[in-house]
Length: 511
Image (cartoon, rainbow, N blue to C red; front, side, top):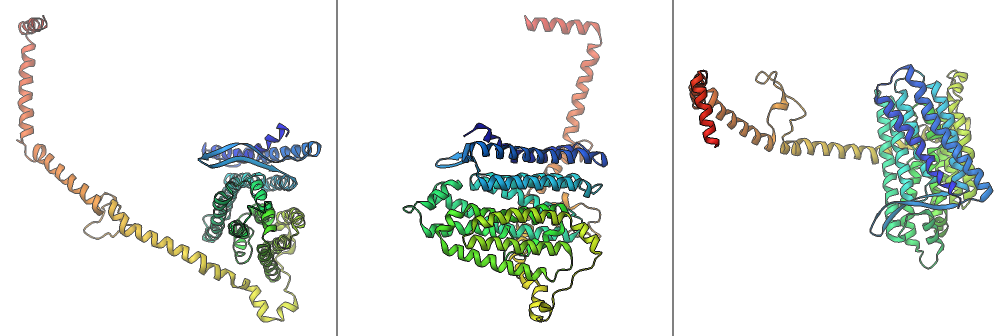
C-alpha cells in the first residue's frame, strides 16, 4: 500500500481543527462584521483541504488501485480489547466521502452570505465544521468504534443547530425532541459494538465481513442480535417509520444546515451503515425482509405526507423521507449497489434543492399547490396524511413524555433527598416578614448544613466569650498585661546604660 493513503487521517481532522480554531477565535473576543470573513475562511479552507486530499487519493487509487481496509495504529487497548485506528478506502467510502466534502464546501460558501450579520455566525460555522468532521469519520473509518465517534459528533452538532435560535422555545423543544429520539439509536449502536466485541472479538468492518463469510463460525442468532443494534441506529438516523417524525422538526435550524444535514448527508448515514453491513445481511435473509418492509412503509408515508404539505422545506423533507425509504427497500431486496448509486445521486440533487429553497419560496410567493383530488376525495386517508399518520403523538407518548417524567422524578429526588443531605438550599425561596432580605444560600439546610451551623455557633460563642463579650475578658487582660511589660522593656532599652548591659549579657550567653 502506498504511504500516501495515510493522509486520509487528515480528512476528518482538518474540519475538527477548524472547529477548534473558530472556538478559540470566538473566545478571544472576536465579534461583529470583522470576525465573519476569518471565521468563514477557516471553515471553508478546512473543507477545501479535505476535498483536495480526497480527490488526490481518488486519483492515486485509479493508478495503484484501492487499498481497501488498512490499520494505522492502535487507539487504545485493554487486555484482549483492542481498538485500532483504521480506515477503509474502497469505491463506496472514497466516492461518498468526496461527495460529502463537496457538499460541505458548497454549503459553507452559501452560508457565508446567507447568515451575514446573523447572531451566532461563528457558532454556526463551528457546528458545521464539527458535523463535517463527524460525517467524514463515519464514511472513512474502518471500524464501528470510530464510526460511533463520528456518529456522536454529527448528533451533537445536529442538536446544536436545530436549537440555533435558542431564545425560541419551539427551536429548543424540537432540538430536544430530535436529541431524545436519536439517543435510542445511539444505544443500539453501542449494543452492536458490544456484541461484536463479545462474539466476533473485533469491531473492524473487515472482520465482521470475514465472520459472515465463514460458515463454521457464523451463527445466525448472534448475527440477528448484532444486526438489531446497528440497524436500530441506522433506522433512527435515517428517520424511518416509526421514528420518522423527528426529521420534520429538525427543519427549525437554518436552511444551510437543513440542506447538509437532513436533505443531503446525515439522513443517508443510516443507509451507509446498512451498506457496510451487507455481508452480514446477506447471511440473514429474514432481517433483510424486515428492512424492506420498513423502507417500503417509510416511502409510502413520505409520499402521502408530502402531498399535503404547504411549505417548501416540509415538502422537500417528506420527499427525502420517501427516497431514503426506497434506499432501505432496495437494501432489503438485495440491491445494495443500486442503493449506493441512489444515495449519491439523491444527496447531490437534494442539497441543491434545499439551498434553493429560499428562492423557491420567493418565486412561489407563499402559494402552495393543492392536494390531488384522489387524496382529498378519500377523507380518511387525507386526514391521516395531514396528521402524519399520528406518529407524532405516538412518539411523544412513548418516547418524549416518559423521558420528561424520568427527568422530573430525578429532579424531585435531588430536591427532596440529596439537597437535604448535602445542605443545598431549596429551589423555591419563601420570603416573609421574618426573613425578608435574607439570602437562602447562607442559611443551613440538611444534615451537613445543620452540623456546620452548630459548629459555627459554638466557635462564635467561644470567640465572644474570650474577646468580645466583656471589655475585661481573659484574653483582653492578658494582652494588656503583655503590652505593659513590653512598654517597660522598651523604655529601659531607650537608656544607653541598659542597652550596653543588654549587649554584654547577650555576649555572655553566646560565649
